[in-house]
Amino acid sequence: MRFSTIFFDLDDTLYPNSTGLWDAIRVRMVAFLEERLGFTAEEVNVIRKTYFETYGTTLRGLQIHHQVDSDEYLAYVHDLPLEHYISPDPEMVAIISSLPQQKWIFTNADYVHAKRVLSILGFSNCFQGIIDVRALGFLCKPEVDAYNRALALAGAATAAECVLLDDSPRNLYPARQMGITTVLVGSTEPNPAAQHAIHTPKDLPMVMPELWNHSL
View (spheres, rainbow, N blue to C red):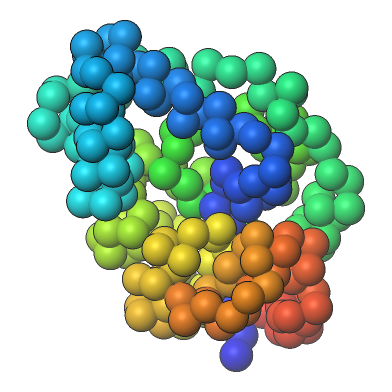
């Protein structure tokens, strides 16, 4: 199989979930719902679970049911000192940069957050672009239309020529069903959502060495 395009999720994929950054973002989400929208802690738990399971992200549900301003929400939940949580990993940068395929960030977060994360991690010049929630028209993984739009934005002719790395099996299932080769990041336990499972993208050469040998 020859591959032309590799999609990378951002949070908890390009850095380990042990950093605590995504946990801090979740805390900000809860605070937004309580402080800005006036929900109780009990209501927040129900809302976040329901909207995540139904729409893929809390934001999507808030837009549909509460007309929340997306710019305000995204700025609030990502207003964190990222450098306190993540730091450059030169080995990761070198491995991903050496891939001959086109490389894209494919994230349910927004462009500003993604740029900040990539800058701190040392990836500023590694990726062809960022496919964020706005580029997706506020569709999000795991909605099938989000993947179709990502393929179009990346200029990929077919799903079969693409690879997706993501820490969420839920986000990998639709991609695998479409014919995208899927790689679960953060666990080496076999998972039906993924053809491969690795601790970190640095392990990609071990499970898919063909990426460095063949490209369209």
